[in-house]
Length: 110
Image (tube, rainbow, N blue to C red; front, side, top):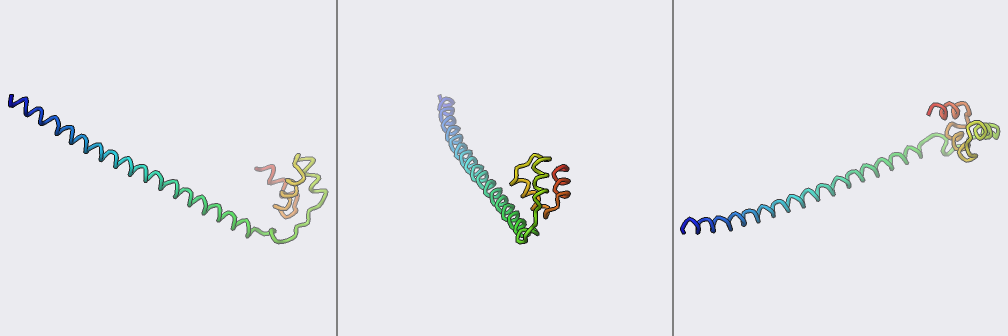
């Protein structure tokens, strides 16, 4: 009977040790969850930085504050030949400072 008593005492100890191990596993899950939350915030921060850099670059582009002369014939050429809307044709010509050749080459190569 002494051997049976020893087995009874060993079983609860194993259960108690297992109980404490599950707490460590829960702590590990919480730690992993917190680490996962930190990664998206870093990604978000880098995305915002990229957006701000892009907007600064757009502000510094030449031709933003200057007047660009766009010929009506050039707009009509882009509308008819490239099947663009008037607005898109004008934006494209502004992007290339009114040079229809550069605009056409850029549109054909991209």
